[in-house]
Image (cartoon, rainbow, N blue to C red; front, side):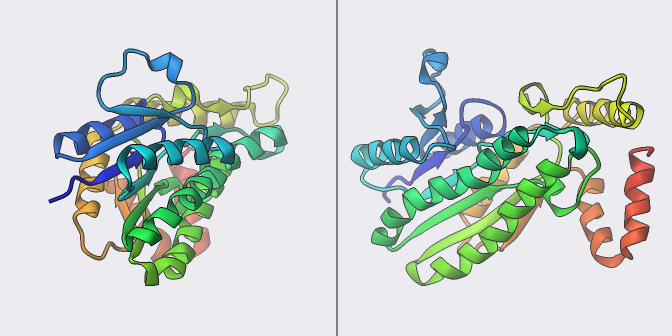
Length: 269
């Protein structure tokens, strides 16, 4: 059986690195991506390509390089993403645009680059890593929620548009996992003069604690492996703590204001 070729964006750290390591251990030919290869000269876990998901030219060059090396791409895992927190009123709009450029536009750029090759092959799988946060508007994380929620919806459309080509799209929404996302995200400063100072400061502290105590990202990697080996993947998958997943069920069945009250109580707002 021919070795499947997998491309994982944002593969140099966090969830993406875990996915790459796990899939390589299962016999896949894995390529990860990073924005700056010079920062990872000692990276040995799997092959890395230099790719900036925000730059269509960079994406095209890297995908062309991958095809030149392997002749095909069987699975794309759109994992690259950034965090962003803050009161929406006080979040600079350029930071909002940056978040959408990475979390929403980025996966679209890479998907568009690989789709012609997958269509030619008559097969392919694209897994968009979203977030459980994308299913609800979370206080002080609303922009992140919106960017991941937008990716969830566009994936639903892409599934239907590409089904006749033997290509499958699916979403995988993780909860909180122990990664470096908190260190790398943009967060609006907690200003002493801000009317949001106390509630935002407390919520930011709670969010950081959730990430620090999060589960092993290898759980996400195992779910990716399961999806790859599913003949007809579902539209949506979730992986995370029981309470994080049950919160999505509650959102479906509870009245909006009751669910909102649960979130306010959770964040002590």
